[in-house]
Length: 420
Image (cartoon, rainbow, N blue to C red; front, side, top):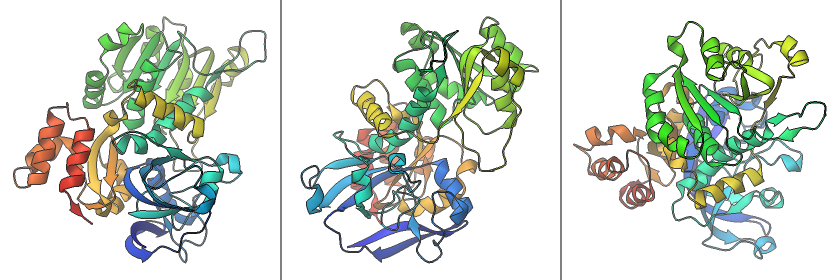
């Protein structure tokens, strides 16, 4: 079977190509990808090429398919896995297969599996690692977004606290505690707000910062403080870009004692140091944002490490249990990852989007891999729809839903967009 896919050959060398997939083996699965959301990690891989830890050294000879936040439909199942999977089944994939002892992952390391493709072959290792997950939802995009949501879930679980006088690490953010999300209104920050408000244990105080009023306003519209109050949480949005001493202001919001949990969503030295400055006793700084610079550093107060027991943790992706939790919360309607999405496009929009991702404002960029369409903001569909019936129809759907992507929008797009 032929597939169309975005393959990486080297640094900033991404190519949309059509090629023949090899014959499926008895321990493999043939699938059609429907949606993939583009991650900053793919941008980093595109910049670093073979220097990236997950990307093979020989991509100039054997290119790999990029994209790791994807969902689709199973087309054929090899004999080994017919007891567990079947044709027509929807799926999501957890690309981080750390339990196998390898950094290899779909979307980075393999020639025939990745999210930015029309068709793929899922290798045996994915099923052996229990990383091919059943998905029962009607829309495909939530399954794509379950991967980034699992990163958020994993980060919350990785935070920890130590009861005084013990050496016991109590995992997770503090129940009823003070939680700060710094630079927290990007796509992953929005997911973290959603999770913080609707998971257990919940914080008592949630402070979300950024330096852009428009992003903060959108976050406040999606998650109003009044909504948080009903869950027993005091939610405050703060523009730290307008303050001479943001750390002092944030400390005052905490009552002067500092925060139990601080998440940093931007790889910026000043933001990390601000997070360190507002930690309370036994405070945990969670560095969520992965930097592109392997020499990235920031100062940390080791006086407080010694006397106030402050500490730091970082995670790179979630695990399979985190993804299952994400899918469960979505299924229960407790979280809505659609709030992350601000742009949609087709497979032919992937290269430009991936290479220029930090320069494109907004949240998640969602790709439907079997259509041809430029990347477009949900907020610009109305203007573009004056000369484009497809955009006009999409605008009508998203405008009545506060510009939040939906099952109705996905169905309309897949039915009416130009196949690639």
